[in-house]
Length: 117
Image (cartoon, rainbow, N blue to C red):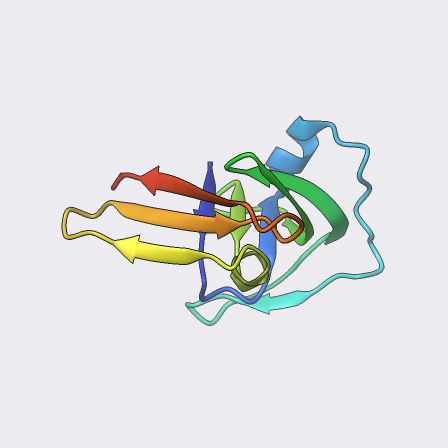
């Protein structure tokens, strides 16, 4: 599962997920980032996964993803993802959301319905 967060200026992956994927994508340890969370704490990433292929709704996106040791999520898709996918979000009164994503290469659009947890 992934969390869509337009308030985040980066895409973030929990180290545990990165290790479980056994991806051949190495973490670039020379590109760490100091990130301030909403509660004011500052955390340092392990590094970045450059051009990591992430498929959402059948569309493959190449993302720059910071890897962190601990996070309350597996994958956070921040504003860089929303910008690339030209995401449109519709919120419903029952807590459900409808996302519309665009493929940056073909302009194909896909709709994803989510439900309140």
